[in-house]
Length: 207
Image (cartoon, rainbow, N blue to C red; front, side, top):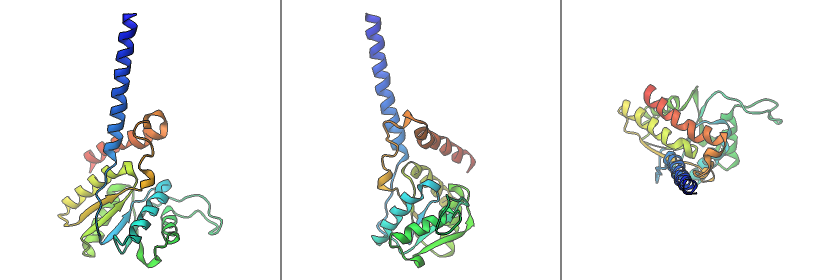
């Protein structure tokens, strides 16, 4: 009986520690650095996440945080669009989503280069901002992608001796997707939170 009670106590202590660890590890990834105003908003590309990200960017635009929104093209296409009779690129879908939410077409710019990952986007944006003398940029991406994004942009800004001030926001609708307490219950949670730590280490070593 004593052995059973001891085992039960150890189990509950271990389980409580794991719950706390899972919450801390997930919460650590989601950060924000809001800006009161910026020269431009940049929506990071990301297939299925483009709707939430563009919705947040449209909201920020309507709040007059910035007069312009940049999009990048990751070269990926979505499903069939009946109206267009083709498979549009996700960057096109993002642009349509912004316009549907009241952002003027002339305020949206798709940057010309194809990008492959956050580091490519950071290098392209820092270059564009330097060419156009932009001093501040507000990034919009998914909650669990924010820390790696801010670290990546920070390193590129530092490497290029850029005066660019970087802010970051994530969609409020994604704040608890997946839940910090239960992300480890399923495969999508591990793909979101667990894989993000692998990417952080990879980016740190490679870039």
